[in-house]
Image 1 (cartoon, one colour):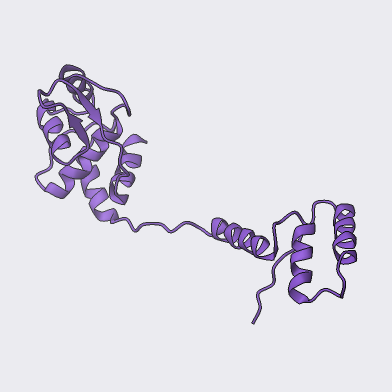
Image 2 (cartoon, helix red, strand yellow):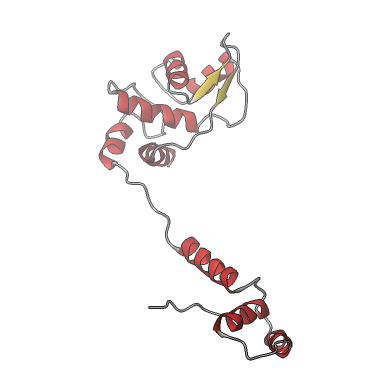
Amino acid sequence: MREPLPFAAPDISALAKTLSREIGALETSPGHVQLLNILARAAGHRNYQALKAQHEAGERLAAPATVEPVDHRIVERTARYFDAAGKLASWPSKVSQQRLCLWVMWSRLPAGTELNERQISERLKAEHLFGDPAILRRDMVGIDLLSRTDDGAVYLRRERRPPPEALALIRRTSA
């Protein structure tokens, strides 16, 4: 079964002129494939295959993007560690929840900005209430959310895509 392929020409006068010129230049009547290519060129495409490829790409882009599943239970459980203002109130005991909390802290650091140890500690202090920016700093370096020089003088946020649960928690604690 053939799928219909929509055809549109921005200027019908130019379409008619191109069709007349291309068909007039042929020695015999055009075959099916020749006629498809003539129509595609008259509409501004390189050939029929280019017209078809553009249509298929448009359909793929119009299709809804796949959404990664989110474990809302862990997001809800981890959100309990944040106060109403979105500050991290206490440090979770479960590693999976610690990682999600670190992603939230990561999201609140400036991208592409080198910070010294004092600056990064001040920014982290402003985002949590239990008074231990060192644990946050070390763990963020440990899971590769931050890079630091060997002497610990310069820190830089590593740009990565957060996992779906982290994105959901970031949105929830930022609201």
